[in-house]
Image (tube, rainbow, N blue to C red; front, side, top):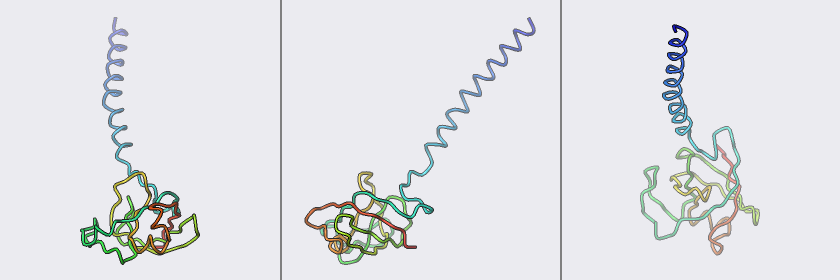
Length: 136
């Protein structure tokens, strides 16, 4: 009889542990950053687009204003002020930009200013495939 009570108690404790521990572990995993380009990972490849000139003067996530004539970019996770080298993989052209905004889209890895897109020569296409490298 006593052995049955101990087994029942152990079963209840195991159930409680499972009930409280598993959701906590799941929450920890869900809160990890989903950055595509981490600090130790220096290169990323994917689709890029550019800002419309109509956004000129709008506030960026880093506190500045968007200017189509500056060489700037929006990235989903890199710190404001990060310097990047962006290469158009379709034509080999390269430009250096500074991250000054956040990119909400998960379809693209970077959005570039109009001047940066012009330097990479993809204005007519609208998007292109790029390689993004952290310079510093």
